[in-house]
Length: 393
Image 1: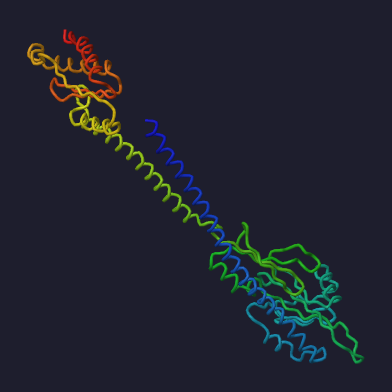
Image 2 (image 1 turned 90 degrees about the vertical axis):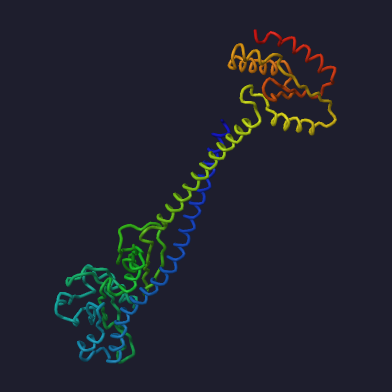
């Protein structure tokens, strides 16, 4: 009974342990594969975003070249600026001596005509760009026309008649965010990635600020570091559904659990079948009334005993009950059956446990005494018959 209970339990526990290990390893591999793919995507789209921003900055370089060629003058600025405009550009501006004087389109941007070098918000970073002759970006900022923008200021230095460089001012472009890089971010969203694009607030402030994102929280994202001019940017992405594939893991676990339960059930069934097989074999080899071996069982066991020890002396005994028919006729078959049962019990008690006991049928019994001589067997049988003479009284 213990074996029938413990073995299926062990099978179940071992199966659950193996299933848990397999599910865990599968989850680790899924996460590893997803992170590998995410790293490839973050590099690909990070480089695209970097190029998109650089393309926006190049507008100020184009204006710079026109100014250099025109010795600080741009004839028909509106026409030149119009040719540079695109859906991702909010406006193009000129700021001689740091003061914004020309804006295209001018309508709706009139308030942008300010002194950048003295402005409380723009002054420090604009002066830094002027003093170090580097292109800077600022933002994202909220645009009065709606949405957000990224401001690019490119300091311009020209040469006077004596060949000395002097600060002319800034060429400026205001880029729409996120339109400037929306092809890349839309692709990330299409491929079911959450993303966050951040940048250093400025070359003077290394704290990262968010430029664009399609989620509130990132869990163990993969990151690509961008460099735009002198400023650091970073793109972070992660699968929208998380790094694990819950659906696959559920299918693996519950499918495996079904197999474990099936295997446990089969183990229980096998034990029940084995138990039934033993019972059937016992019924086939044992006498149903006395529980001694029947003729078939006795012959089979006797052959095994003799084959196991072929040189050992054995004595075979056949005996029957005197006047047994008289008992059945006088007292009935039920009483006769009880007498046979009692006789079988006395035989088990009298003869050693090594003796093979059987009932041939009716009132005939057989005994095989191993490791015994005929003389020893005779003495034992005389004693046995004395003890059973009054069994029916």
